[in-house]
Length: 112
Image (cartoon, rainbow, N blue to C red; front, side):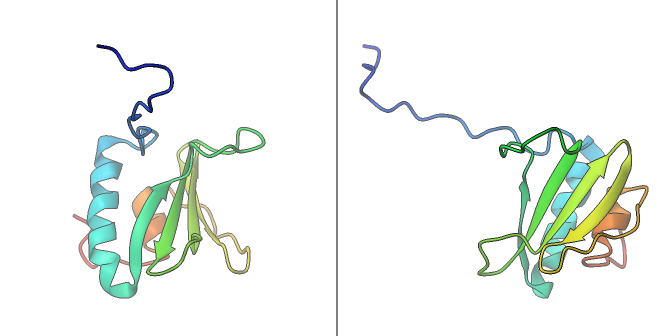
């Protein structure tokens, strides 16, 4: 019997990181795991949030352990990336890859 309108129907989570290439998604997953010892515990795809206008192709929130707000936002637009520090609002120079941008937060010795 189908559920009535009053019954809650669980929804699937929104697809995440769709703006990233498969290679970028793999790199991001590896980077996050290796950045755990530096206190980085979560990366969230912020594109599904309600922005007042179209802001970028990709917005990643980088979170530290125990914090409810992102410490950094990594923003991709037209093939370039910048890193915004949320505590003071500074924005990095442009980088040509997601890996270069993430290395400004936590550099990996071996990006593979």
